[in-house]
Image 1 (cartoon, rainbow, N blue to C red):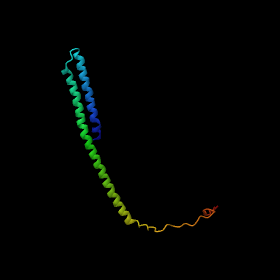
Image 2: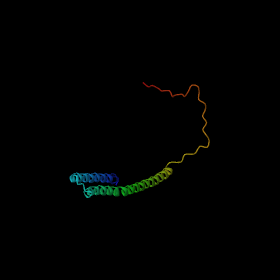
Image 3: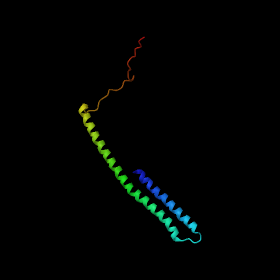
Image 4: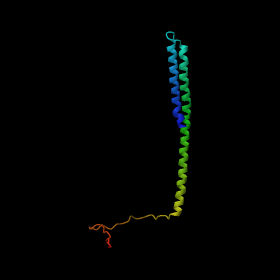
Length: 123
C-alpha cells in the first residue's frame, strides 16, 4: 500500500512529461501555423495523468494512515494484555519482596578500608 502511495504521483508526473512532449512535438510539426487544438491533445494527456496519479495517491495515503494507526493500536492492546498476563503469572510464582519501612543504617567505614579474604596458595 505504501508503494502505491509513493508511486502513483510519480506515474502521474511521468504522464505529464509524456503529454507535454506530445504537445511540443505537435507544435513543432505544425510549424508557423500553430493551432491551439493541436496543443490541446498533449496538454489534455498531461493533465489527465496528473489527476489520475493524485486521485490514486491521496485516498491511498488516507487508507494507509488509517491502517497503520489501527495496527499500532492493536499492537499496543496486545502488548498491554500480554504484559498484564505475564506480570500476574510472575507475581503468583515469585514471592513478594517485603517493603522496607526504615532506611538501613550502615556502620562507619574503618580507616583501613574493606578487608579482603586471604587467598591461600596451595602448591
